[in-house]
Image: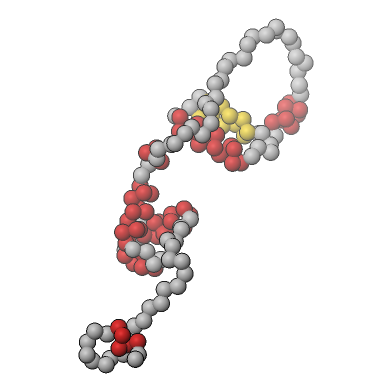
Length: 148
């Protein structure tokens, strides 16, 4: 007995024309956020259709539409489960005795400030010195933008 006799319901002895074998664990694919963003951007290009882009990446059009809808949502609507850090409190310096400091030369001050970036967001000034961790600085800037 052949496979075509087992799978075909008709009395005709016609061989199977298509036979698919699925291998692997059958889990869902996981897409990196950068890949999703690239695919969504490609679906918005002129002359492209969602169905064509979805077919290219073996997605269903519904999946791509869901990604496009999620990309349109403002980040403010994403619920934060917990605060990322404690808010900073800025206090004015206490007035101390008026001591005279010796004047520094311009060259010393320029050397000290070399490589320092100063940012001001809604009246809050941040000075980023040489050797600051880029990820930490990015988190602080995002947090200041979110509070403004």
